Amino acid sequence: MSAYFRPTAKVVSATALGAGLAYTGYRYWNTTHFYFNTAHAESLPSDSTAALKKMDWKGFTELKLVQAEMVNHNVKRLTFALPDDQSITGLSPITSLLTRHTPEGAFIPVFRPYTPVSDNDLAGTVTFMVKKYPNGKGSGKMHSLKPGDSMKFKPLHEFDYKPNQFSHITLIAGGSGITPLYQLTRSILNNPADKTKLALVYANNTEEDILLRKEFDELAQQYPDRFQRLYTVSKLSSSTDGQVQQGYVSKEMLAKVMPHKLKEANTKVLVSGPPPMVEAVAGAKGGFGWTQGSIGGILGELGYSKEDVHKF
Ligand SMILES: Cc1cc2nc3c(=O)[nH]c(=O)nc-3n(C[C@H](O)[C@H](O)[C@H](O)COP(=O)(O)OP(=O)(O)OC[C@H]3O[C@@H](n4cnc5c(N)ncnc54)[C@H](O)[C@@H]3O)c2cc1C
Image (cartoon, rainbow, N blue to C red):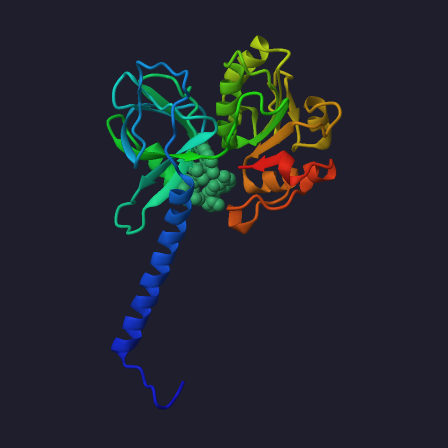
């Protein structure tokens, strides 16, 4: 330290405070900059029911929780009321809703996206399935809400999809990463004009963790020529019904549900799950999770390129 500059206690604490505020501002900007730049208001599809009012998504919209129930040991199904019973979210797939709340005593708001599992043209309510993480700021807040409590939401468009854009889509999900893929599956299969074929490989720790299984099984029964699914878990229970495989997502599992000629033109693979699973299947995302990164993992070995794959 220079002999000409002897900082007083005041100078030291002012510098520390300045650095602290600068860091806080930087973190706040980093979080909000990403979300505000990617989130944008949705427009209704032209064939939507004209009588229904679309939500006003210009900013964050406050919605009241009307129902909450645990669906397994750590996942809650949360239903929020839209402004009136004629409102629909009108979101196009795949769009999540970014939540915003400021924890008590904190200065920086917390932003986390959750993907509706209710249909985007359902009037009156919107429903999410939220997995609680230990000390999770976003999931902890969502799980703490009681009917009558509110949360702020804003659309965050994740992936552009146009009907019949691809001939086949392979969906690879882990845990609560299933929700964006469920939204797309329902929107494709419920659209009679969309002929896209879908295959799902869904990995979890245990059978109890498999979310929306009844819903996926019903879709597979309803559309046997267009939708196949394969569930796999790390730990099989003794009472397994035999429909679930054991182990991490593998080349062999993908070969069972992907097009026979593994890399066909006009196919897409969507991968959504915890970072270690995404990395093993498709290579790690880049830029601390903000960019797609290069293709690696199983899909890399199978010859898939960056254009063929989207990582959530
Ligand atoms: C587009 C998109 C859609 C999403 N939709 C849903 C949804 O519908 N339902 C849902 O439950 N979640 C969804 N998520 C995840 C959600 O946004 C949060 O990341 C998640 O709830 C954890 O946030 P947190 O604040 O509770 O945990 P944090 O406070 O961020 O982290 C708490 C602890 O949990 C660990 N952790 C955080 N996230 C994960 C993870 N994914 N896998 C393993 N460990 C983790 C952290 O390492 C940390 O130790 C979605 C994410 C994205 C990007």
